[in-house]
Image (tube, rainbow, N blue to C red; front, side, top):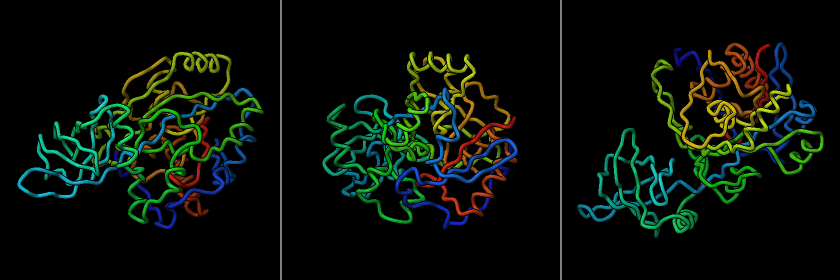
Length: 343
């Protein structure tokens, strides 16, 4: 399919730079067969029924954005910006670096008191970094030297501050490893989750460590030519068993976020632990998920392609046009939608 088929015009003022407060007061566009309704996330309990299963991604965003410089070669110290995106072992990360052209294998980089060596240089600004400390020591050093990697469309408009460390994290985050938040989950508060539990909504947790590839533009002209970056995920065996049981009983499984959906579809509701680069476009046959809660995504993005595959390309164009005209807020800190597939 042509990538241009997933383009649309978004006025800059529709891009959210701060989340709604309180979180559940974000708007919620319900897109169901033959109808669209404007609600808020606080209304979600009324849109679900007892026995439904919500599947959340409990990854935790780490301070993966680093600023520093190269040391020890030619007497120069060019500034370096690094965004960690995939952990390979206790001390080794793949990262996107700017300016990558100034680096070669063997270069040493310093980010505050944290040092790393360039072990390998890949394509499109990607390098492999081996840090001088490992495991818990590295995690502690990153907490000091790093910052939360806000999306480029936010960082280009304002400076990051302390509030972002709380805002850009779900209340149920448990497992360190993401460099981007599973943003649909940002709308949920502990009170809302208790309300959902009280009306019989089952809550399950999977883990997908969202990588920086989620921010990368699709440069190909045809979707068949686009290569997805892989991300590590896990569906525990007990969770997979309960989800299969729910579907066998005719209960709905609803993914909270495209990250949860991609992992469930990659696993086929079987126990899973490993990397996935699943790329979902219109024509894909969904086998694991009955509903989707998600934010509003970038034009020409893999995520807009995914929601178009799930709810129908024409319906999603109509929904996004309605959202833009009605003042919905877009992207990571923006409003939400509840999508049901076409009948």
